[in-house]
Amino acid sequence: MYLQNKLSILIWLNRPKASKKTGHIPVYARITIDSDYDEISVGAKVLAQYWDNRSKLAMAKSPDVDVVNSRISQVVVDLKRHFVLL
Image (tube, rainbow, N blue to C red):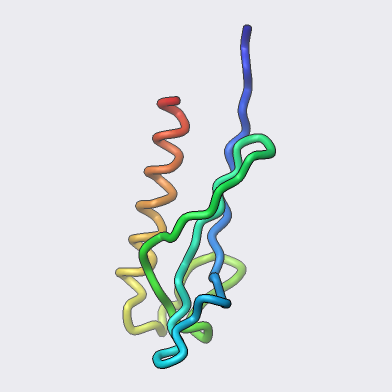
């Protein structure tokens, strides 16, 4: 029997968990396989004004753009690799 599962990864800002002191918002990934989903933290935080909703990455003006964007890319690659292994 051949099963074909579909993987979808959505990167988003979890605005309700924003820091009241600094204003940094944690970046989350929503992993959906078929109709089941789960949300995990990417392990990076960014200010709302430095977030690009279209590309789902931090903007170049952000002070920690390299750290945030590389962490997002690494998480997406790891999730795709684990999905293929399963």
